[in-house]
Image 1 (cartoon, helix red, strand yellow):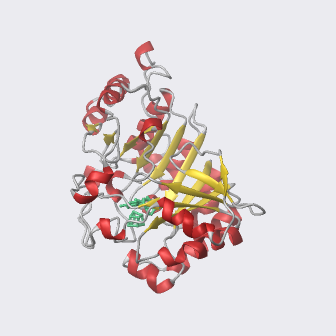
Image 2 (cartoon, helix red, strand yellow):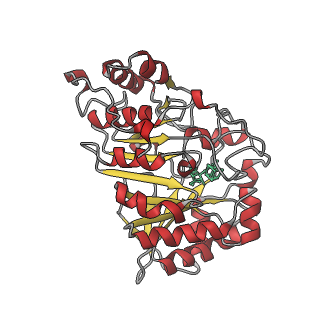
Amino acid sequence: MPQELQGFVPPTTPATSAHAPGTLVDKYGRHITYIRLSITDRCDFRCFYCMAEEMEFLSREQVLSLEECLRIARTFTGMGVTKVRITGGEPLVRRNAMWLLRQIGRLEGLKELVVTTNGSQLDRYAAEMRDAGVKRVNISLDTLNAERFKAITRVGDISKVLRGIDAARAAGFSGIKLNTVMMRGENDDEFCDLVQFAVDKGIDISFIEEMPLGTVDHPRADTYFSSDDAMALLRSHFELVSSAESTGGPARYWRIPGTETKVGFISPHSHNFCDSCNRVRITCKGELYPCLGQNDALALMPVLRGNPGDDAPLRQAIVDSMGIKPKGHDFNEQMQNPKVVRFMSMTGG
Ligand code: SAM
Ligand code: SF4
């Protein structure tokens, strides 16, 4: 363990009844049991649907320290959150990310620690992540073609990701899922191959409708590919049997009989899932976004840094954030008139 992090114990003050588990309920009655915590805005890829080619990244002081990330996770789990997803940017490029995973993995009340990654560092970290208590891992993969992979990610090397997928399998994760963003004219000719790849590896795959987050070089309305169209396409090659299984996220799942593979669809445009939203997102700047698709946020950094020995103000701020959780996003409207300027890499997908 790095010396600077040795023996770190974040402050804990007893929860009052106003902050006890079960108090995270928004004004529409939705219980918040899941946080997505982005631990960096940096990434070793530049996927063209996620980031601009030239990105300005935050300075070290603007970003939550790992101790602050842990304090946030601990405070939420003390208030009834049972699932934490670590994301980014690319979470595995953050220095000492394994220390954080290990600490979060031990939190009382936590049922599931999961990670979303581009897979580029998994070859190195998969075994350590599993040992740290990570239950499942989502790995982004939009194509199987090396040249296309380089074009989509602008810089990425697919062979590292493929090695990372195998390292995750070898590490024995029970839930490995590929995430594929669907883009008309970019990768829609590969959906069947990607599913076959998942079948061959004995893992799951989810197809995601592209969301209008941040200004990118292409008109998103042109590349939009709906889950229903993808389903029709896949059905010409695979038998898909509807499944009631859920991983506590927005995906709807289908099984391919005779295989280990579940195929999921995350359809923010065509099958809005806001009514059952159970999560909030925290950026690496410590902003709490109650909705991925809106601009309302609450800054936790001043609360954290202003009250180093007392978690009560942090708990109160989190309870207050329930009041600004909107009913839902309006991505369909935003496809034509984008209003969320921050990139997905900033909010944390
Ligand atoms: N770097 C990691 C990765 O790529 O998995 C974690 C962060 S990334 C922002 C999380 C997920 O968001 C990835 O699966 C990525 O494909 C997806 N994503 C990024 N921009 C998106 C967009 N505009 N619409 C839909 N999904 C997007
Ligand atoms: Fe990086 Fe993930 Fe965004 Fe690609 S999708 S640029 S890998 S954060």
